[in-house]
Image (tube, rainbow, N blue to C red; front, top):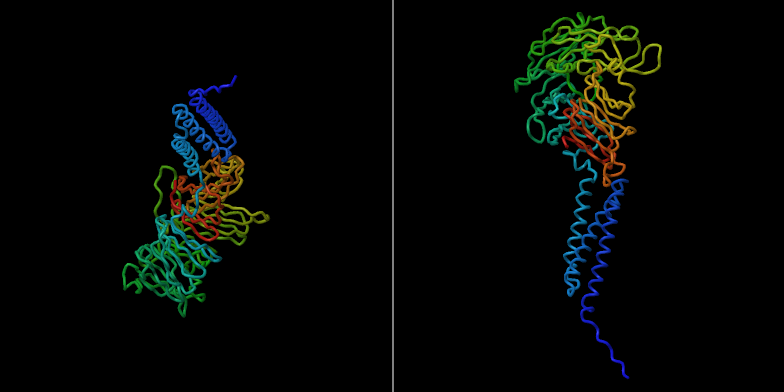
Length: 522
């Protein structure tokens, strides 16, 4: 009997294949979603960025497969019709879960954050800043022309050649003085243009600039002539308002009273002080040349004068506006004593320091001496101020009570910035040890470095990782102003080179091929 083939069931040929495909797709979708969830949790827990990115891609794949399975079951006769929308959805979700997060957690770049890029500092170059945070900053070049940098917008101007002599910046940043052989050119640093225009040219070497009143000295055949000039007089500025002539065998060097090292670039003092061969050290009125107040030191005393800004104001009080003259005198054994004056009137006097060998610097109405006490070979620091007549370690008892420090970022007359045992960065008042501000550390064992000057601190420490996509081995750079406000914070893969704080919470950061200006960036 012949065998007759049984016809296939049309319904089975239509539904079994797609149903099987839908179930398979749904199984793959569930597996992808589950594996993506596991990768997400492990990446977040172990802070592994690769797992976090893999999780985003797996979740996107799972979502696309889920849509494809649903369409396969709902459209049994139209194979492949839903692949485009499913793939688009999966890709969109995968990108949404990975790309924005990767961009948000990528490290910063110093070059992108900088508002100005300058040539790197070479040997002998220097950065000179006055007190006004918005005044131009002088970039002194040992070879090549100097530059004036506007810290607010990053614009810069090139100065004329200074003939190899000194370049001086006014304390308020408004004038630049190019000191040549026997004469001084005064440039207006506030005038617009590619280069600061010439304001006046006078004969002599500057010793002080108070507003528009410039005081210069010039050697004569019999001694030294001290003269005053009014820079606001225009073409008449070269004519002297007054002249004093001292008959000295040592020329102008014998009349010199202000401390200084004749650096090729510096900030010019605001108060004129000179040594009268008969009377001693005197403060002068820059408008008349007459002595102001009492004699600061007798002719036989071994003293040098330092001009600083006002002392830091106590909390709740208004800061002073008058610059101070701090007279530092040394005895035969090296013991130091300080006398402070404002407008020629005495303010305070210190007790004698321990005998020893000391190097002195003055800032913000305080004197900091570094050296060794007689009978020891251990270097140390002592401070004299209005708050403490007796010389003491920076911060006095207030610092001692704060405990040990890992490192110190810097010290000036206002603050000493240190890293404490908990890796916090803390600023203490240099004279009385009062805490001014503190920054949290990225961890108790973090290595913190940096620099502090001009009321600004630059703090560099390892960047903490709280997300899987946070970069590994990155450095956090923070710029902090005088009040403890963080004005800029960057997370960097590259390690910065030189750090140069500027007034007003700004910084110049050196790299291998550039000097970059970092301003407010939070």
